[in-house]
Image (cartoon, rainbow, N blue to C red; front, side, top):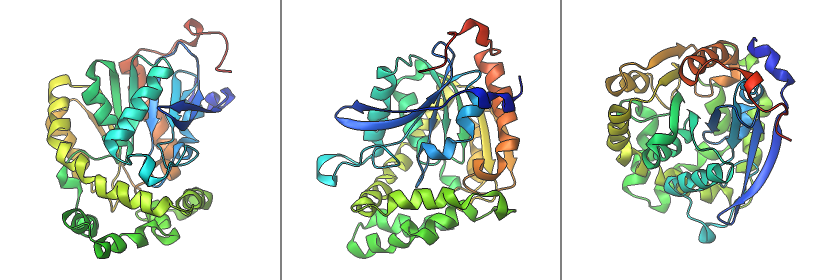
Length: 307
């Protein structure tokens, strides 16, 4: 069955309480199929996977959550919730346990990468495969774009915090979607407008600035992520928009040092590669998952889709 036929699968939109925080997620596929968890980047949400979820649901149980403070998940006040990547991993771990996902493959992008890698450190035995799309684990990827952010990490003063604010404006979000894209007409403007709608909520910008400050905790864990790769050798597919100004292509090739059997494909696009290159990426994803999770056989799954 070609990936186009997957449009017959229904995507369900759900929300459940996880450790007192309402977490929204998209879910599609068969309950007994291999699980694929999609973790989104900044400043997006599971909305970035709106093309991918139905394209994979004829073969896999697909779960795409919104991180706390993003999309349709709850955004608790800063004083009531720890906005950190350690907490994000804890919440997603608890969500997957509630959903009965005992083992799963990961598709991770941008913020989803350190969240997913933290899950892998917690439960290496649960990870069946990893698809990395412009999600970083190596310093080589972090070039000029990161100068202002690194200054903020060194000194979290109000002046350095304020220097990050333009990145959270509509122009900053649009830059993330269009920089490095060859044909901008292939990118739906509703994508960045959707993200900005949530960024512009009262209190959101300060939360996002806290999260950006905490991103340095991921960089500190890069050596540990790399040790995980070497020790466990998860099957890995690296899909990388090679024109991404945020994570340079050197970050993609660096994975091969620790995962020499990983498959690497560069795409002639930018950061949000699925926006304009889904037609190239989805066949690669299907091929990779079929080889490492086993050939899909929906006849062995439950008769009914998730209801």
